[in-house]
Length: 158
Image 1 (spheres, rainbow, N blue to C red):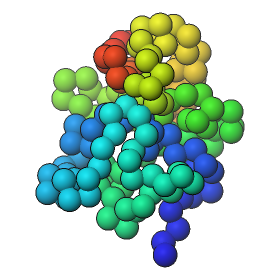
Image 2 (image 1 turned 180 degrees about the vertical axis):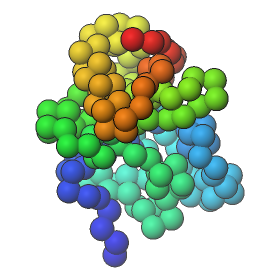
Image 3 (image 1 turned 90 degrees about the horizontal axis):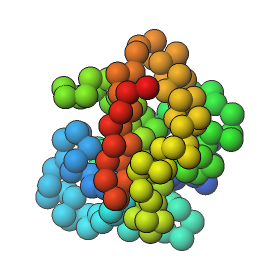
């Protein structure tokens, strides 16, 4: 059996508890694979996680999952910035319409009924810290911040 996590993840797995739809990630996915794997999650916990937060389809997981680069895992941030602790997952994306953006996806936003605007106000310090970390780590300016949650997305510039 293949190891399912790296040491930095611990028991976080926020990436598997946040996203809306693997087909909208910007990474090519074979629609037949997604259908065959019966993956469902809508800004909440992926149905392919077992009770120990382990992926039961890890060996066959979609490209979206394979290619996701969590800012926390890729950097050397203190544990207080673990996505499970700050309440969101962060990665950098390049997008024709947004340029280079910091993609923030709020953990379990559907079950928690989160509103993006008020959430941003409450979490702006952590958002700024993550933006600064990404810019320093990848030596590139972040054009915009894109926050995704069940009740709507918000794109803004700091």
